[in-house]
Length: 101
Image (cartoon, rainbow, N blue to C red; front, top):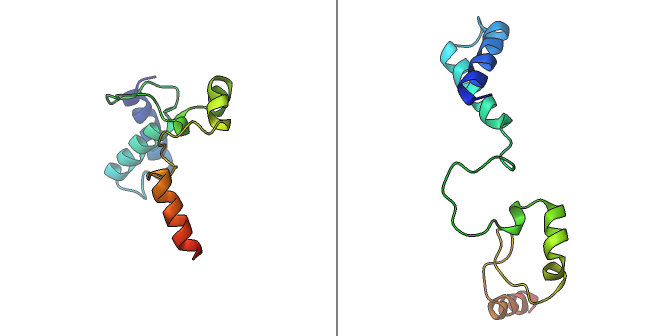
C-alpha cells in the first residue's frame, strides 16, 4: 500500500475516534507520522543516495556473524563505526592513561 493511501486510512480512523477533540490539521499530521513509523526502514530501499557500505551497526546481527565473525573476533578490524571511538589507537591509549593517572 502506498503512503497516501495509508495516510488516508489512518486519518479516517483518527477522525472517527478523535474528530471532535483534535483539530483536523493535527490529525492529518499524526496520520502522516504514523504512516512513516509503520514503514520497515531496514528492509525497504533507502530514499536517499548512499555511498559506501552499510556500517555493521545497521546490519542484521545474524548477517554480520555469518559473513564477518572472524573480523569481529580478530584484532585486525579497526574501521570506524557509529558507536566506536573516532580516534586513533595511540590517542585512545593516551586518553585512557591520563584518565587512570
